[in-house]
Image (cartoon, rainbow, N blue to C red; front, side, top):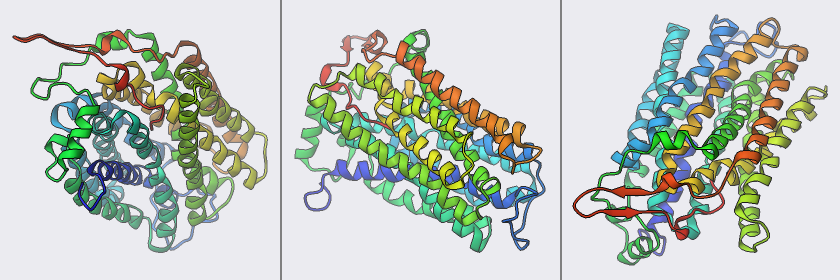
Length: 465
């Protein structure tokens, strides 16, 4: 314990929450900033005093999707790097690099859209290490009955989107779009110092943890021998596994919905629903606030259903996909039928709010399948899911390039999003699994052979990001 009776692991969990929060602020601030940087030619809410950039719809789509190109790569290797180098320094170094790029973004944007594109690709690569690293941190710090609390810190950290859009919209409107970058660069730079002080890779390496807490954690978590090298994940067996691909598919569907709300909804709210930039940021952020709240509530409900033996983990994972994918798909379809701005915003909020059920379905399924390689599996799935972040802006640009203010041009975008949500959810319900897969087993081959397999008390709680 560090201060009074507060456990060291609580500080680790809190810092994980803020790690996700600042990660998201740097990730999504461009979605609001770009409304001011490159406004629609027919957008009447844009003031003449604001400096704008003469980019085409296609160039804007490339810049918006650039983050995902780098994010895809680092998600694949993020789990392995974090397992080898430790999550503490992996997160700190990559986030510090992202801060530098965030501060440089205004100057690069003025230079050319290609310069900002390269910066966003690099930032996506750096920020992509965060979630695999935090999954590794959960594995070493969270005892079985506290995994849900740690995992929920990753879900609620998406409140960073709420912070970035609600505050960012007002900042951009008052001080200019440059400060939409600077504000969150400063915030993340301030976060780096407490992260370095409070977070360590394991309880054994933490200099201020009490002996009793260290004993409590180590006695409740069956960990691999830290003196033995972590083996290379069995990529071949992982990628030939049907339940793993069912997880990847459902994460892709989730990615499509997330990236639509993240990258396209600010433009939709500003150009079609005719709200000013300040209001656009606040209204768009409500969807993520709803998702964070619903994720927490779905987690509580899932814990209750499992604890009371009302529902098995397998049934829960698959049935809650109705909330995380199928119903959000229906909401996007309903968006094509309404003409009320308030009702349209309500449907977007409800759609992403229900998607919060992903916390008890796809997000945690990697720990069901193979807790020893959860970071690797999550990284692969999240990486493929992130391709939606590249595709969505291009789809939006293709259908809306001629007139971004016409709702008719947006209808195909909603049709496609609805279909992706529903189809990927159905695939997971049919082919998904919660059984421990055989590739989870780790066998050390040396003078003293040691075989490590996941046991029941290692299996995670029912909630995650």
